[in-house]
Structures are given as C-alpha cells and as structure tokens.
Length: 134
Image (tube, rainbow, N blue to C red; front, top):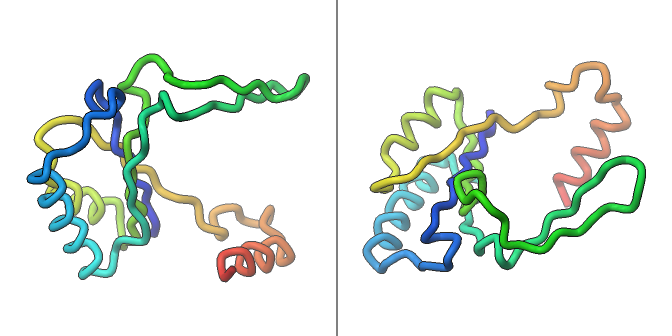
C-alpha cells in the first residue's frame, strides 16, 4: 500500500523561514532510515503558498487562476512523503518517529489501480502501467 504523508504548513513555513541545520540534520537521518527500510518512494518540501497558484474549475467557464499567498496556513501543505508500507498502522508507526517538535501531518492512502474495480478497464490498466514505467 502507498500512503501520502502530508506535512501541514505553519506560519513560519508560509513566511519562508528555513529549517535550521539541526532540523535538516535530524530530518535527513529520519529520511535515511525510511530509504534503508525500503519504504520511501518520494519526499520533498514545498515553497510557501506565496509562490503558488490555484486553478479553480466550475464546469461552466474557463478555469480561474488565483495567485498565492493563500489564507489559513493550517490548511496548506509544507511538504510530503510517499511511503510504501504494508498497512496504515505501519506508516503511523514510522511517523511517530519523525523528528518534529510541533505541527501535524495527515496520512492518506493513495489509490491503486485495483481500487477502481471494473471501471479500470484492461485498456486503462495498460495505459496506467505504461505511464508509470515512463
């Protein structure tokens, strides 16, 4: 199973405050553990929402582009991991070991092709596999 671990933004991350050398060192150690265990597929931090845009769709008119920054930093994302583990319990156990001193992460399961049942036709499965291989 794949899970996305969403690291929530805070006022510091939204104001572009960079982690200290000590914080980067501790996160590097944690990431190295994830890699050595073979569970990390991807991980990155994100620039503040002031550097971002949102594209809004209503189904009737042209998509609307809204420049950041966006209000309510607790609803924003500061970074993420994609982890491949055997269960939700396993990803929770990994995150309990993360070197955070404050804040919050959200853990969400990533859809797999089989989750879509019969709606994922053989042609769509082939396309999905081909795109992932590329």
